[in-house]
Length: 317
Ligand code: AHR
Image (cartoon, rainbow, N blue to C red; front, side):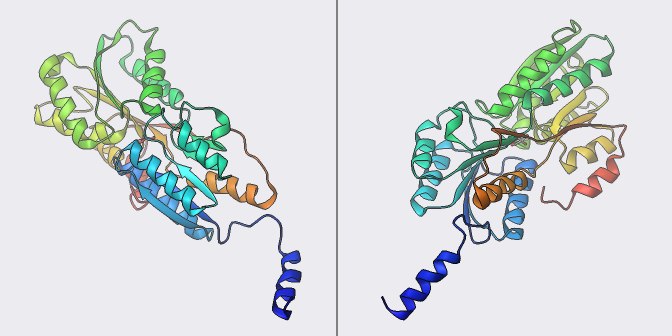
């Protein structure tokens, strides 16, 4: 053994067995940039990684599951230390997650759930999406106070966990209110553009006078719909009540203007708890619970929406 080799060998004894976060590499398979909320989640994840000295490999899947699967396979081939996955849809992940598991790479789900055995991922950092729908439904039930209220619904991306669960929660909340009925429901794919197009078709088929409220699975679709309602000569927030989810800055502007009524907040900081978990795991092998739940807070037009807008507007939305 050369002197150098023997020096390295003795130094290795002093290096802790489990690596620390500094210098670790994490792959992040992001869905895309369909909403303001999604943009903020990407910004926060990059900031969190930088602050912790973690190298982040970022892959934007442009809303396609096949791109996410390719990205995960790429991360496995590169031998990253962990993978963050924001899964566009709930099904079809088993094979690729088995590959990550076989390579001993922990996977953490961000903001959406999947239908797969729990041993295929380390934990999921998400809100309770059924609860979000219930909060929205309960708000509307109270707001209409027993009056007849036909509702139109803009669903999120078909097959995604928030679209499935937010619909379920809302329906459960209004199930005991015969005055509340969903008359039309269609996907707007979580985008402003589709929210506007689909709302236009609701207004055309139902007639504005026959729509009392809009429930949108995210704020961006609600913002698009607000535009459609205004173009139809109606007053959003008054003629048609609007409740949605995310709490992006633009919906607070709309609430300040009286054009939207309520939103349920979803934090874009999913990466903070995910990196905390990974750091604990890398330090001493600590395993987290299978679900790390983020908060869901209701904001309405009674809140100081100008102040909330100011506090959020520079956060990457
Ligand atoms: O999974 C979270 C949802 O995805 C957000 O509510 C929506 O804006 C995004 O596209």
